[in-house]
Image (cartoon, rainbow, N blue to C red):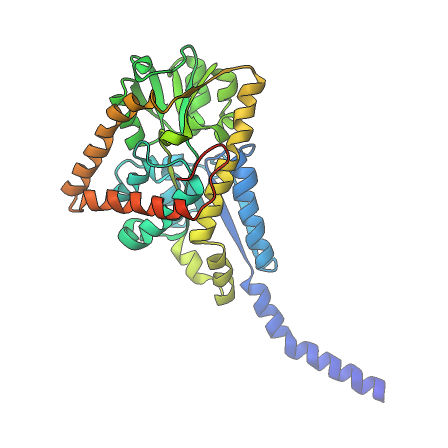
Length: 357
């Protein structure tokens, strides 16, 4: 009798608990993560996959990711942000600058010689958007805002030592402000998404490109170019590019409260800083591939960089004027970005091979 009663009690307990168990199962969610980065890239392997794994672990396995690098779900890199906005996918990592002029206020971080520490500048970028550009990404749930490490020149047949060396060269740039800079420096700027670089170099559509070291191997730039020109960190980086990790708002709002907290805990200023730090940390890996191939690597001194800075400053002047025409205070936005970079640079360790931002 005791055994029968115990069995009945146990059965009843399971039955009563079943709705709760069913509810937990229903709260589990699978998110599609889409990006243009190649599956062999440092960004995918050390940033995107690591972030997804962390979220999965923190959620106790109730958040799962399906990761799709290299635009595997279709479309073009230019369409990624809208894919998140429209719910075609759940999470994207992309360049806002792919859509020229759509996110104008954050372009300030892509102006020449603004930074040299991606971790500090990513913190500045996050705080800047939260304080003076909150509506820039209003149609998605922003998870992180970051930049990469110092961008530099990679060329096929000519070493870049001075700004004059760029004259007549067709050089790929990633965004509107960076292609403007290349034009002011004397190059013929060619705007194109990152995945198109290998084909363009192979066919001679471009003579070179500007990208950070970390992405060099994933687009075979160490194989397709012979010369690499980096800037002395003491003088600041030639440029950086802004990125956004964004989530579809409806999908975020549909999450159970505790799962929202997991996403929130893996978003924001510190996550942005971590992404920037990891990406710049991978520069050493990319640089080594060029060293191993015995390519020529030249460091443009702080003194020689002055001519680049003089010519490139026109980009900053034009950006301020453009912001003023759009109804913003361009000078105030520029000063805010610079002060935030300085603020976070003071509290952030110097990046490997460089000084603070």
